[in-house]
Length: 65
Image 1: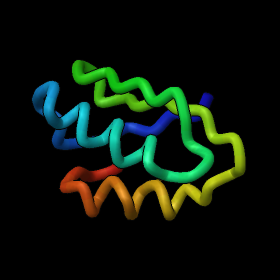
Image 2: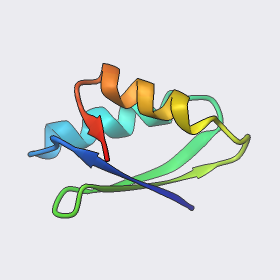
Image 3: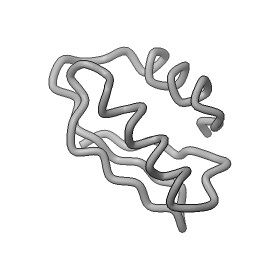
């Protein structure tokens, strides 16, 4: 499992948006969002570049710590 911290999530809708953004990325699965800590964990089966993940999250309207 890989872990990143996402800033700006405040509700279930935010968590859902980040989850959907990552789950629609090829090779990413089992996304779990912890709103209280901002931590997002996921499995990366194909080695998606961290920059790609950060860009997708930023396009969804959130920041990556």
